[in-house]
Length: 193
Image (cartoon, rainbow, N blue to C red; front, top):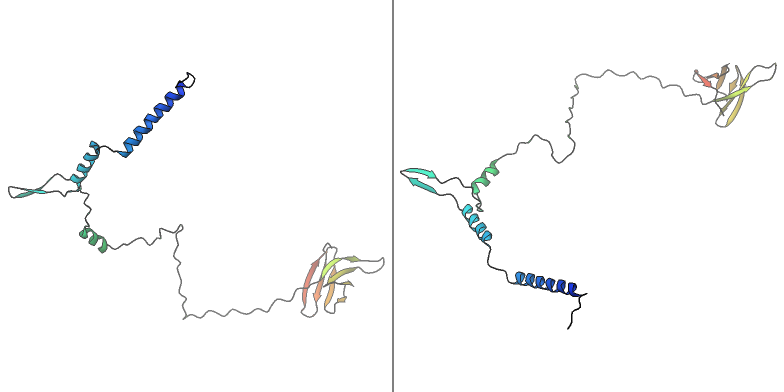
């Protein structure tokens, strides 16, 4: 089998990748013995997990150098301390975004009677006429166009409209009308319509 020069680079790359792949497969299938760093980690964690010992010298107890323990056993004395603790917070709910302000409720003294409020008579009903303009002929008194509920009335000063309203005075911008049933007077302005 002949290998040409044009494919020689490709062949070298394929062979080197094959060797690398075989090396990775062997390394994954047959792991070597534990590394020295792993054995050191195992022994150091075992040393930390052991409780400190106390030495007795000449009748005095002395503790070994302070070593923090990572003892996984359940400490019932610590659990009892936490059970006996009572939480006395500030009353604020940490799960709410806004703070509620307590409202002060004032007690009303029932011994003192409130003074009765005098009942005022109801206001008179409004006059529902609309003033649209003037109707005038030469030599006649001035008259106005007024409407109510679709009905149009032509009236001069002193005339009664709709058997209820009297025209008192006509001015260039308004008309003054009186309700003869309730003696209510109202000035109605000129409206555009």
